[in-house]
Length: 223
Ligand code: OAD
Image 1 (cartoon, rainbow, N blue to C red):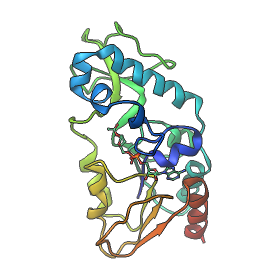
Image 2 (image 1 turned 60 degrees about the vertical axis):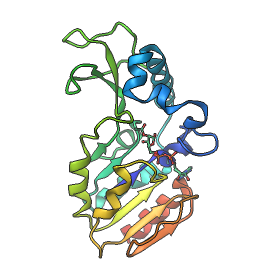
Image 3 (image 1 turned 90 degrees about the horizontal axis):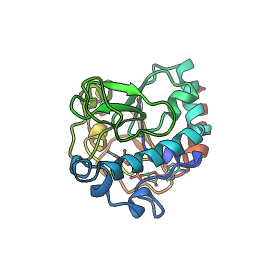
Image 4 (image 1 turned 30 degrees about the horizontal axis):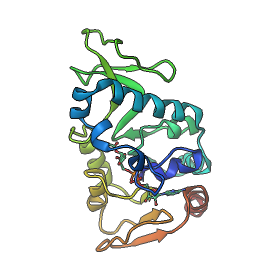
């Protein structure tokens, strides 16, 4: 099982959230990524995600995304990503679960099960779902449930190897997944600035960027 965060897409030119030049330096999360923000000022929220969708569409997968696809030659790989970009899929990974949604899709603002592909970068105010309600980005906002978490916990609890790449592990429930991994399974973190993680058995920390560290790890795992 591979758990990824914004750091894996940093070398594709997409900003992380909590690094010094990260997205949450320029925006207040409560203004753009909560249900209350959407109620208060949906156009502002829509604009924020339109800009991010534009960046995602312009970005390309990097060496780390591509290296992970090679693991599928030898392992049953599940990628659980907190990222709303689709760079894992574009690199060719077959089994990707998006914990926080995907920015290239929209959803009904009254029924989260109604999900649609977005053509291009812009989701406009006035575009509606089949029930007539405004379409919003298909992303999980702070304060909303994370529907895929039960599935992810199930997979974590059966993982033979658990690799974490480019996440500050600051956001729950994603950050708690490591607690479900079997005691005896190796756990590996690749992140140049990872905070100290205590109390985890068989944990190895590789302080490198994803673009350098992931291809090296994949090579080792394929031997
Ligand atoms: P963060 O911005 O919190 O953390 C990014 C991590 O990537 C940090 O630990 C960096 O050290 C690391 N990093 C930076 N450059 C890297 C590189 N080139 N290679 C590898 N690692 C690098 O992003 P996330 O942990 O993904 O949620 O954030 C989790 C969630 O918080 C996001 O999914 C988003 C956000 O608010 C929602 O929007 C619901």
